[in-house]
Image: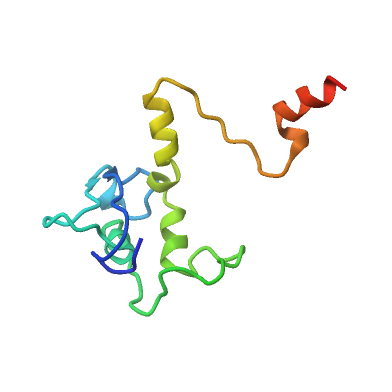
Length: 124
């Protein structure tokens, strides 16, 4: 997602602003993720529609990654903490579920938690 509207970015799915949003007047309101002309919205506008007063100087994303302890260091971090974005299915999950299958993501690099590894180990 870009900081401002338009440009080269993926179009997001429309959402409903959750009841857990800080701005009570926005609870339950639908939020379109595209402008009337079809261009995708940017971080700035989406957060303002969620009721945030976002400083114009705030960066879109921290580089290389956000400091773990910060909760409002950049626009991407603010948006990632909103329940409607946390609970949104990824494109991969959507395709798998539409095909009638279940999708389970396992922790990376933890063979102790991966059931396939446990089956492999038990046969030797």
